[in-house]
Amino acid sequence: MKPADLGELILLAAIWGASFLFLRLGAAEFGAVPLSGLRVAGASLVLLPILIWRKQLGALRAHWKPIFVVGVTNSALPFLCFSYAALSINAGLSSIFNAAAPLFGALIGWLWLNSTLKRLRVMGLVIGFVGVFGLAWNKGSGMGAAGVLGSVGATGTPGGSAALAVGACIVATVCYGFSVNFTKRYLAEAPPMAVAAGSQLGAAIALAVPTLLLWPAAPPASSAWGYLAILAVVCTGLAYVLFFRLIANTGPSNAIAVTFLIPAFGVAWGAVFLDEQVTGAMMAGCVVILIGTALATGVLAPRLRRAQ
Image (cartoon, rainbow, N blue to C red; front, side, top):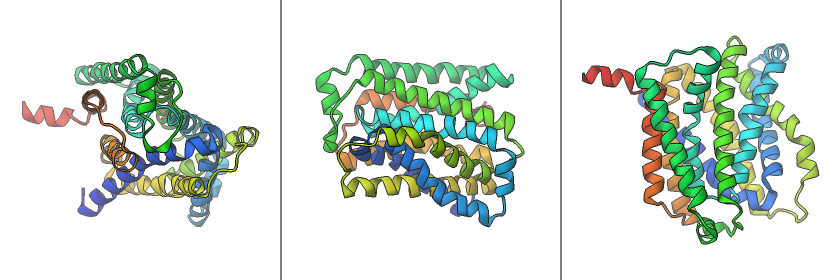
């Protein structure tokens, strides 16, 4: 990986890590559904002109049905889940659960597409899921009312059910895992930018009516609109452009390394800007999840073989 590519990888991780911060800041003002709906609508406005400029609109029309499914499962549903979770748990914790998405991708790929899982990858799945569900149990059952309110930080967001919030994060990562396999199965021939732009448009269409029906009674503050704009334009639209640039320049196996950097930035942004507490349980869970993910996705396998 060239220094410029490495710089883009770190920038992408910082941007995607910051998305959990802006979800935390915007969810209380907009609500989970309107925030998600406006996020994907804004990202569509960023990505569709790029798609038209690349003259790939025909690819979107040719593959619109599977792209719509990807829009629902890779954007609409997970964005909804993480926005809902932002009402109850802190940004750093959500970003740690997000790191488990490749685990579910590997598991669903094995169950659905008969992907090969060698011994190290199976071990990685076991380790990773122990980390995910151990952290979920710790936060879901061990976080009483005081713990939930303590996780609110500077946003003043009223705490809801921590257990449901953790469950929403896990559902989001399952959606990501399904979507990556669905894309591999049905959209292997579609241009990546058509999938990126079309999926955001599909998600915006899917969330349009719920967004209008659940629009907040009180007008969101101007600062909340600013957080939403950053979330849509930078953390979604620009992030997709960077991600597909990395895939083109370094290959998918290198680009996926961003997964391992996002929690570090998610936890850091939450601690710096929202005074969120970073607990030992969070860090231990994060390490276990990342080790399991690295093994399950095959990232560590070549290094372990060279070490033997």
